[in-house]
Structures are given as structure tokens and as C-alpha cells.
Length: 189
Image 1: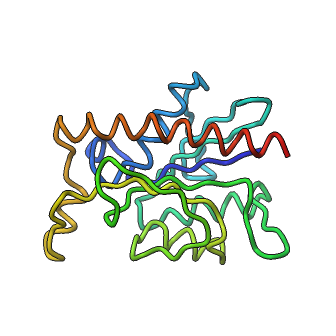
Image 2 (image 1 turned 180 degrees about the vertical axis):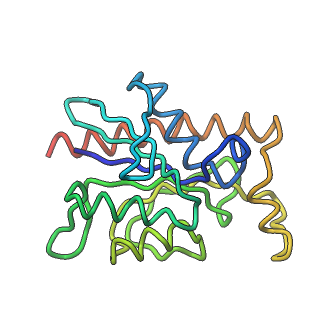
Image 3 (image 1 turned 90 degrees about the vertical axis):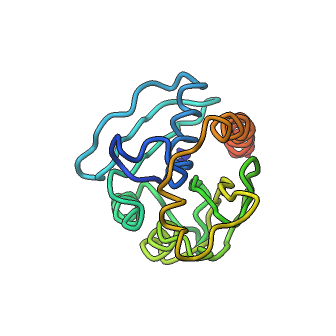
């Protein structure tokens, strides 16, 4: 089974915000692949969707905790033995989608084993798993001029403009292909 988690904040008031780029990328992927609808799982404190993609079971998760507590949902998956570490503490069946203020809007990066770079949601996940050895799909939200530290919070919880949404949808298309490739590679092993 492959597990894909889209980080973001729950609730209508956070839809369309920069900090929810990971959550929205996961929803975009599920819709494009026609995987079905997300359903509430109170034990995981998340919306979940279990389906199949290229002969591989895929479990998609949207934590219903706030961003900085995303590790609660991930820890519940680990406790239920849905997520497993290898002997060298890697988690091979898992990818985390999230926004990244260090990457320009319109770009994304796939990384493995990196620190959180100050992203509180990612920090929460790393703490919960006691490892950083997993795939992260980092979605750029940074404008040409990065906001100063006093304005960052308002920026990340601010909404994308229509032009930015258009750019983001182009990135979501590329991320969709990247996730397909990651899952396909896993199936072919």
C-alpha cells in the first residue's frame, strides 16, 4: 500500500490558502485519478480515501488536525502498523505533500531525508515518526519577493490570487505525473 498525505488546515476558511497547497494537491490528484471521495475517520482525525492506482492500493489522507499537529494523524498510522520503517529507519511507502516558502510559486521539488526547514507541519510529522527518511513533495508558494518575518504568517494563511491559482494548477498537473511515477516505480519493484 502507498500512503499519500496532503498537509493543510481543515475547514472552509482555509480552503484556497497558500498553507493548504499540499492538501489541495492531494485532492487534485484524487479527482484526476477518479479515486473516489474522502471520508471522515475519527480515529485518525483525518479524511481518508482508500483506492487502487496501477494495481497498488493507495491510501490518501488529509489530516483534520491543524497543520502544526499533523504528526498526530501520522503517528496513528504508524501505531496501527500501516506505516512501517525499514531497518535503516526509512519509510518507503509514504509521501508527504506540503507547501514550501523556500521554493518559488510555479515550482516543486521532491526530496528525501531532509530537515523540516522550519515548516511546523513537517516538524510535527518528523517528530511523530522519529525519522526524516521519507519522500516529501514540496510545493513552492514563495512570491518573487519573500515577505519579511513579521508578515510570513499572514502570507501563508492568505489566499492565492486568480493568477497564482492558475500557476498552481499547472504545478498540480506536474505533481500528478510525479506521484504516478513514484507509485509506478514502487509497483514495478
